[in-house]
View 1: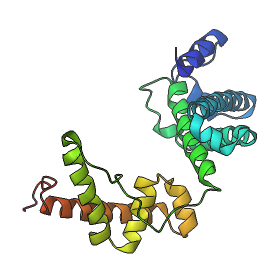
View 2: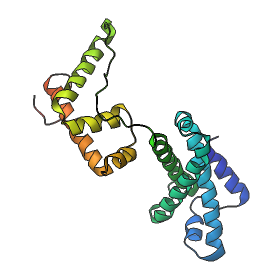
View 3: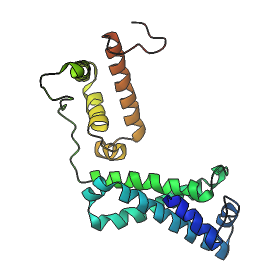
Amino acid sequence: MTEVDHEQTAARQAGTPAPGEDWIAELTSDGPVRDDALRRLHALLLRGARFQVFRMSALRAMVGAAQVEDIITLAADEAMVAVLGKLSTFEGRSRFTTWAYKFAVLQAAVELRRQAWSRREVPLEAAPPLIEPRPSPDQYAEGADLAAAVREAIDRVLTPHQRRIALALIVDEVPIDVLAERLGTSRNALYKTLHDARSRLRAHLAHEGYLAPSPGETR
């Protein structure tokens, strides 16, 4: 049984709202009714955030035990704001608790990655090798050839800025929020740079015969 299932069972046993029946009304009301709904919602989001943080054991170890509770609370608080801001978008296709729980899971993953990288150096210079140089057995020959072509394409067809962004986001898996903060830019600007870099790489590899041309593209 998943964490959400446990929550739903507990909710039914406690007499709390069924799928979307009362949650929206209670959260948009006034006074003690709304206060109680907010309390129950925040408790749910805390459980969701905690569940996700403890699933991501490698990143959790990077931030240290002292920060874990702060990350869980911050993620639940941010998820609370997001849920309340999107109440009008809830369509009742799932239980309200299931819908809200996903906000906490997503926010916890984002916050844990951000904190894990907050004190780490973000590599933005040298391009690491995509494969280790070694004799290639027959079964690895094609993959090694493609990897070498990708490495060469990164050096040849990308601008220095595109190369730094692509390597940081794809190879080193730096969270985009962290990279945007370090470079003093926006997420959208980085997404645009990454999109342009991927387009250049794909066009080059297709031209060299390593990839099939995109629809409408001629060799």
